[in-house]
Image 1 (cartoon, rainbow, N blue to C red):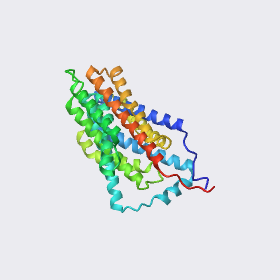
Image 2 (tube, helix red, strand yellow):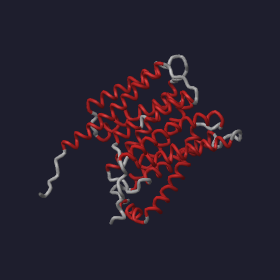
Image 3 (cartoon, rainbow, N blue to C red):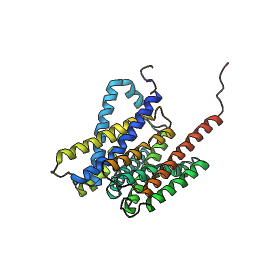
Image 4 (cartoon, helix red, strand yellow):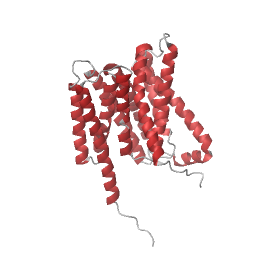
Length: 334
């Protein structure tokens, strides 16, 4: 039986994995902004190539992992793959997760194209946890608490300051903010669906749900991406292919793989706070590399929004500690 269990990931390494993943995610929008300038690709085509490329790399990573760990992992996966849910419900959950992933990624890239990397990333990553908290309260009965309500209100205030305080510089555009909110909604649906799967018992294959979601997302994106224009322009093709490969490999396959591996050792609340590295890194890249402007209103709104999300994570962590404290201690033989 020792071949089935593997040593737990050290907490320090889990923190490093999540931090690297969040930093890598912050570079995806910057690479997309550079692609928009030279490749002729639109957000739908770019999202398709990101999803399809990430799917291929994740399939390869799972094959290597199974070959390295031997048949024990495969037998464990087969033994726990059976689910009490009927086939139609499992298929519906996979379709919903994959569609939400497609909306999440495509709307994010469209927001970056319309309102810039910094604002698009901050709104998406700031609104996402708020929508997830509200959705968990409405669909799964998870308590929000006074701290959670305060964080949600703070996030809404930060979003209002961000939108209204953009000034006349054109750095904050309502259409781009709406696309970022749509992206956050897709992220919330994807996360809540995955969380419900985890509550139901989930699967022993850590790559399985992600691979299925990427496959469905790629299929959903292919027709509109083909209509938009699937191939990059011949001009500067090598640079475009390099950036597309980077987006598929580093922020997508490697980023998601390290993030889910890190969650095995790091609390979800801690991971959500570390994920704030993504909008921070995106904002730094936007100003230093892409030359985007950051008005005073944009900076204040960004700080308020990120502080609210950090408060939401702290509230979640305290609630988890309170639940463990209130739980009755198991009776042990003396």
